[in-house]
Length: 526
Image (cartoon, rainbow, N blue to C red):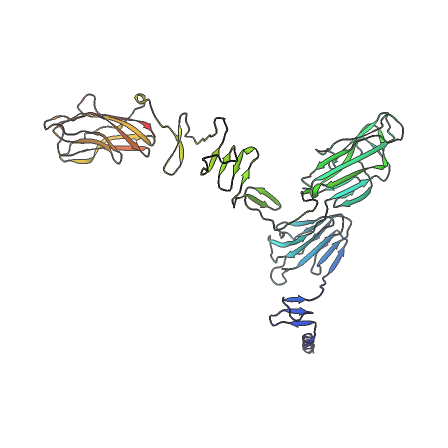
C-alpha cells in the first residue's frame, strides 16, 4: 500500500503546474525551466525564533534567531559532525534587538573565522555558515555582520535630588537616549578599542559649609582612578550660603580609548555636603567617529589579509612582513626613505645629481661622520677594500716604516745546489709567512762561488725572490749578490721558497759570504 501511495504522489507532482523537473536534475517551483538545482519563482520562508533567555543553544531547527532579553547573552553553536549528517552549508542568522551584547561561542576547539567566538553588539546582527570542517579549523565563517548606522552614545540626566559628599558617585537615573552603551546606577560600560567623548555637568544647592564646593572627575569604576584625560568640574556655593540658588560650575570632560572593556563613572570630592539639582545637569558618552574614523559606522571585513610589509594575527595587523611590490616608504624629517626602485636614502628623500644608479645614498649635510662600519677589522688609517666577490673589509693601504717593519724568513737554509743536473723545485728549507693580501717588497742576498751557471730562488706561482746569471767561465762569486723584488700575494698564508739552476755545475762554495744568506719582506700596498 505504501508503494502505491508513493507512486501516486510522484505522479501528482509530475502533473502539477507548480513543479518542474529539468533533465539536468534541477527542480523548479513556479517555473518550467529551472536554471539552478533548486529554482524558486516566489517567496521563501525559514524558521523565525525569538528568544529572551540569556543562554541559548542553537540547534537544527533554527535559522533566524532574534534576541529580546534584558542582559548580555551567550549563544552556543552546535558541535561539528564528521561524515554523515555533516552541517556543511548550514546558515544561522542572529539578530540582537537589545542594548546588550550577544557572545556567539563555537564548540571548542572549533573556531569562527579562526576565533573562538564572535560578539554581536547592541542592535546588530551576524550571519554564519558552516564550512563542514571539524577540529580546530574554521568550522564557521561569517557571511555578514551588520552595524548600527551611528556610533555608540548615551545621554543621562537627573530625575531626583541626590545628596552628595566627598567620594559620592553621580547616579543620575533618567536615560534620555542610548545606542550600544549600557548604563546602570552611574556606571557606563565602554568597549575596548573605541574612542569616547565623556562629558558631565553638575549643579548643586544646599551646601552645608559656607563657601563650600565640590569637584568632580571621570574615573575608572573598578578602582576610582581618574582617567588620564579627564578635566575637573567644579560646583560651588558662590557667596550666597545657605541660599538655594544654583552655584556656578564648568564641566568635567574626557576623551578616552580603553584597551580592554572598561566601566567608568563620575566621582565627587570636596568638603561638607550638598544636593545635586534634580532638573539641571547631564552625563553623556559619545563614540568619537565610531571609534575607527569612518564617521560612526563599524565596517567588518572578515576576509582581511595582510601583505606588502604587514602581518595579520587574529584581528591585529602590524608591520613586519615582506614588501611584495614596489613601495615607497618615507619617514618624517627625511630620516630614511626607501623607494620602489630599490634605493635607500638616508638624510634625504631626493636622489641627488649623479646618483641615478646608486642604491644607497647618505646625505649628512655638512656634518662629518656620515658612515660608520664596524666589523672587527677597523683600525685607525684603514680603508674599506673589496675582495673578488665584493666583500669589503678594513685594511691598510701603505706601510711606510720599512726599516722597522721587515719580516724575516722562517726555517733553516740548506744548500739546494748539490745535484749534478739542472733542475727546479729544489728544497731550500725556507718559508715566508704573508699576513694579508697585497703588494710586498722583498730583499734577498746569498754568496755562491761557481763556474758559469744561473741560480735562482722563487715562490711557485708568485715569482723570483733572487736570481743570478753566468758572468764568467772561471770560478767566481755569482752576481748581483743583493737583490730586491716586488711581489703580489692575493691570499695570506705560508709560502715555501724553492730553488733551481740551469745546468749541472755544482758551486765551489755556497753561502760562504759575509753577511750570510738573508731574506725578508714588508707590505707596502693592498
